[in-house]
Image 1 (cartoon, rainbow, N blue to C red):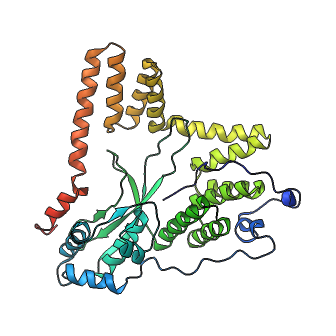
Image 2 (image 1 turned 90 degrees about the vertical axis):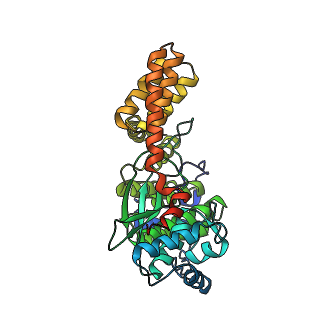
Image 3 (image 1 turned 180 degrees about the horizontal axis):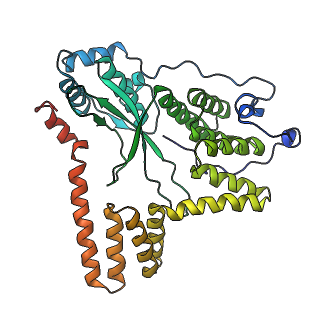
Length: 378
């Protein structure tokens, strides 16, 4: 899932609407009375079926999967067929595609691959569902949140075996991630939000707006699309609409740091220091409680030679997340640079131990293990 974050500087306020909309802007107005369209009605996105199978996809399944096998065998054969590089070579890129387009182009992002897999698995009679995964947030050196915050994978429920997760994610973490099964409508919200961001990055404002709007038609509670709409309005010079969109994002998810940060920046630009500080305070509160942000602070302190501060941040991070080997690794280096060699050895051993455990836990995700699963019925 892509979130627009703080990609855009604020445009000059659109004078035509600066005083014409003194009334409170509602979420309904953000979606259906947009000044981006002047006197016209906002356009709709052409109908898209994310899960349509092409004839080529059906042929591929018939060639590589025994539809008469049990569910575990069918799932193993499907995975095997899709990861065999001599049969089907998948390439990751940032494009968001339907199942059919992903199969045809052999490329896409996590949502693209998930669309394709869900479509194929369901065609084979498997109970395959979208699963939303919350990825731990990280921060750049400047303190801005990274764009990626949620990810979509597949959960396959098997009648005679444990459920299986199929994940095309390239993100790596040593921790079990929070996840939940979502409805197809929520998956469509992810899809159109991504398409909207792609159009926004290409300066195609009408198409971006139409796709964000379509995303929210599928799931009105999808906070990232509200935040991205806010960024779009802010870029185009409609601060009151941007404010309403950011507030709608926070109404659906009070922890949406992108919406908080952008709302604070918006108020700061308008001279509303009190409101800006309110949201900046919330952002800082969320960040300082987050072990990954403290890890980033520790990294910055380490680079600056402030090893005592780095150690303090890392100990907090480890109390919150005990299984992140990179926390222990940096803690070891911090003690080493502080001259405490024995402590450095202890924490390095802990880092190595966790790294080994992590590799063991994640073996199921590796291609070689999936290939082996074909021989033992998964």
